[in-house]
Image (cartoon, helix red, strand yellow):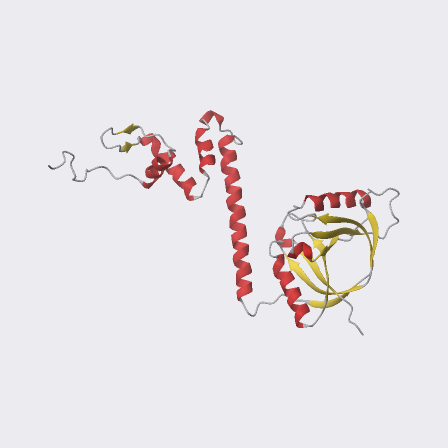
Length: 273
């Protein structure tokens, strides 16, 4: 027997992509649902919210944040209200992601260009007296320990140091994610009468290093390190398994990362004989 249910396609009004998306994610309650077909109808006043939802989903706003945005009543939306905070936070994430993507593309272009080489020289670094804090950095540690060390150094030196700060790092920090780090501030004045317990005086000797100046943000610092390692290998130079960084211009000086300049020194072991 033929089925009493018609198999012919039903005619219906086209559903905009925005409202289809809203239905699939249950973000917008339809004004009416056909009990026979299950087709959802939306009122003209729902067009703008539907399009807003669509744009947010195009920008990958997480559903949990989108629901928070939609749940905020108009009366709860001053300049820094719940809805604006949700949107502002996501836009910051998008801008950060875009910046990382652009920098990754720039790094890839450099890596794929056989003519692109970062300038490296062999130099003698002068002996220097510094105030230093040493840290045993565990695997997975963030920047908090470095920030704390710099606060102790600033407290010890006050305004008496005009030279840029630096740091000395074991290679294992880069290869294994943990190791010993020493951050320091050059200091030629008489020692302060009282130093924080973490701060000590350190005399850095003259030392030979392969040196390169890194421009801009630090998230492609690995390219500069790669250039230094290649230079050392090509010139049969033996590493001390230590690197130093000198923060000539950094976040302490300007909030414009394109102006940052970091001198990176790959310390070379003395040649035998």
